[in-house]
Amino acid sequence: MAAKTPATPPSPVAQFESSLDELETLVQKMEKGEMSLDESLAAYERGVSLYRQCQGALEQAELRVRLLTDPAEPDSAQPFQPDAG
Image 1 (cartoon, one colour):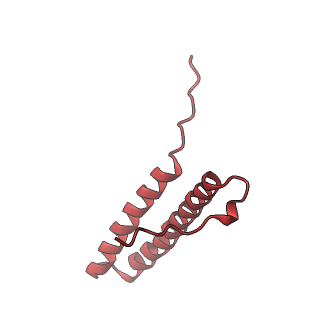
Image 2 (cartoon, helix red, strand yellow):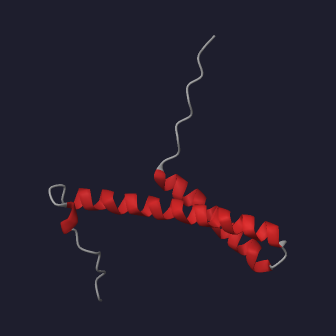
Image 3 (cartoon, one colour):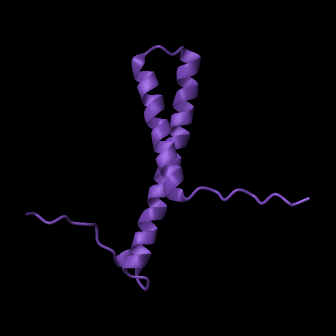
C-alpha cells in the first residue's frame, strides 16, 4: 500500500483570502438580523478568530516585503506613497 502524503497546507495568501471571504459572509448574515442571540455570539466569536488570522497574514506579508526591500535593515522600509499625479 502506498502511504498517503499529507496535503500541502494552503499558502498564507490563500488562507487570508479564504478567511476574508468567510468573514464577509458572517458580517452579511449578522447584518440581516435574522440570527438568534446564540447564533450571533457564535458568529461574532468566529469573526474575531478570522479577523486575527487575517491580521496575522497581513503582518507576515508586511515583514516579507520589508525583508525583500532591504534584507540588511528590515526596519528601514518606508510606507508606500502613491504618486500624486
